[in-house]
Image (cartoon, rainbow over all chains, first blue to last red; front, side, top):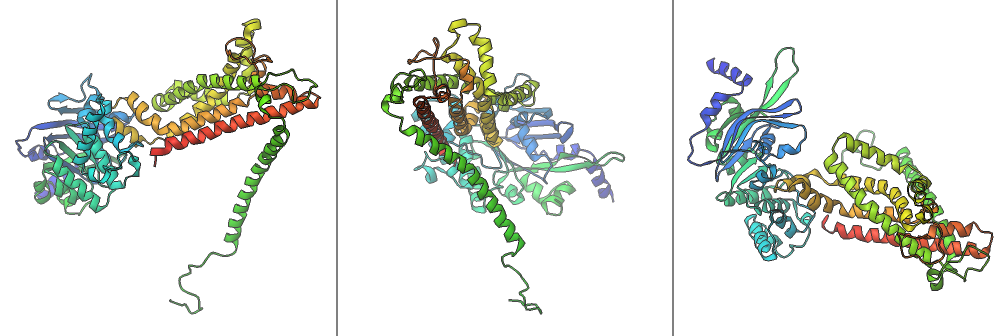
Amino acid sequence: MEQQEQKVTAKLQPPQTTQAETYAATDAAKVLDARNVSVYYGSFRAVTDVSLPIYQNQITAFIGPSGCGKTTVLRTLNRMNDLIPAARVEGDVQYHGASLYARGVSPTAVRRRIGMVFQKPNPFPKSIYENVAYGPRINGIRGRSRLDEIVERSLRQAALWDEVKDRLNKSGLSLSGGQAQRLCIARTLAVEPDVVLMDEPCSALDPIATGRIEDLMQEIKSRYTIVIVTHNMQQAARVSDRTAFFSVLRDEKPGQSDIRTGVLVEYGATQQIFEDPRDDRTQAYVTGRMG
Amino acid sequence: MAVTAAGRPAVDLGEPGGWRRAKNRLAVGAMWFAFLCMLVPLGFVLAGVIIKGASVITWQFLTSSTIPPNVLPANIGGMGPAVVGTLEITAFAAVIAIPLGVLGAVYLNEYGGNRPLARLISFMSDVMTGVPSIVMGLFIFTVWVIPHGLTGYSGMAGSFALACLMLPIVIRSSYEMLRLVPDSLREGSYALGATKARVTLTVVLPAAAGGIVSGALLAVARAAGETAPLLFTIGFALTTNANLFSGANTALSTQIFDNVLQPYTGAVDRGWGAALTLIVIAFIFMLAARIVTARFARYSR
């Protein structure tokens, strides 16, 4: 009975206490630290009061039902939301202790350190080589031999080199979906970012291509910090060290229309989230009882 | 196969009959009819110009000096000055209109958004598309030729008028091409730390380049054939005037106009010859547009 009551209150308020509690102690350094982040699209509050740290050289997975704001939160971590004219961010994100949203911070400089791979593979209509060399070039790296070296290293890291080394001058659009996504990952790695944000990178791929990208994430995590949004809970369980579960909070006050917003329900070590969730909603989601 | 009591298969996967097929035939027929309606005038125009113009065209016709439209037969005098004039006037118009138009389109699509200035420019360029070409000529005549008195007529004045005509076409076609560039490409570039200018220069413009170039070359081809904007602006010349910036000039389109109006067979023949020359020049531009588009499309599949 008491548990039932708790559940009701938890649904109506952003679960500050449970959230703080689930920040299980870890020795890893915080790379990113979102603090009370709320994101608005116009007057619609898409995400409310999300606080979560991202730890170095770990893979952090964001899971949750559609519309819960996973991608929105991910995009606040490298200021991609700046590109949406009506979007506004409240709260702060700290990156190695410096605010990403302070006055005078260049979103360009932020994105050079915090790269992003998108849901749909989006290679540029350029050659495979030029796709990978693009980032280094805009960061001022010149010289064919230096670029050759970066292109090869990045494509090797992305486990694509052997498949494309003989056709580097072919269009990036000639690749299959899985290869194109690995090309996009290589392109991101070529600028040697600190953090790689991945927004459902495997949702357009078949299981074999997905497996290759998951292996690749494991291989590169010693050098990068990875945050991945996924709809696939098995994927989160397989690849991630920590998992954040987001959900949609419906605030149905009498006399008002249905106000909905995304909240962070629970955040912790992946094993704990999947095997011993503290919040009933997490439990319901990871066991497949709730969409 | 399951068969109902009536003896028909339970699942009917047969071709639809009757009315639906008739509608299909009707629609396909209508399309063919429209296609032929378009092809017939084109065929007649091309055939007419080639039949009447081909006999006139010789190397001497294409290169030698022009004579005033008169009774002399077509094998005397030529279109050399007009060929040179058309090429230089059109080229300079392109030099003015294409950069301005492409930059305008980049502003409209990449920077302007929904700002009042962007909406104004977009509206004005649409209005400009609808301005008759002779009015463009009249405009340059009033603001450029008259204030400069006798030295006002020049190839450059003609280029100004043609540029006014090309500008809205270039803006519109470039804008449409930029709009087709998917946002995912822009985001991909931003995510690597590119600035807006970089994104525009290194991703958006190259992705749209094929369409922009072919749109611009079509505008050039269109302008090369214009007569009205040149009538008031370039004056009249009988010898080649390679200097675009001073002295009266001549062009194929105005030569056609002047010659065909004459009652003399020789002059009319010269007009047909000029017409065929102009069509060939426009055709070369179109061909160039195709080749350039194909070249830029190399990486887009």
